[in-house]
Image (spheres, rainbow, N blue to C red):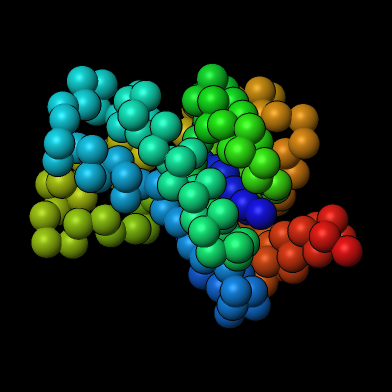
Length: 180
């Protein structure tokens, strides 16, 4: 089973997964950004967004399906993925491999996202780079908010302003009710 935690940058995906880990110790965590970082070392990313690389999407689906198959453990995936075609491509590839997917999306108002992004430090040793990353994350807010209307029908929308504990309870309650 895969629990994909989706949402805008700053919506709380990683924080939610950190809250889920001790409550669900058998679950593995897979961050697809790592595949993007590796690909950036190998090939040029013309758009600057590794999600635009078909190879990234293929490798994310292959790695996620492989982890579930090989280790027979639930997989937590915190990743912003709001391009409808890319989301469908990855989720369809996982479903074709027989993987059970629970897709959650953390909804957070734009002003809250901006505050959260501005309070984060991505590259503390490089203030200029840090500001570039924050600006890039903030530039993605409109497309992330607009994506809500194009999410797969079985996506469970969560209020990203709830506490991490409340969100973890909601995720575990939903997943647990489907596995019993």
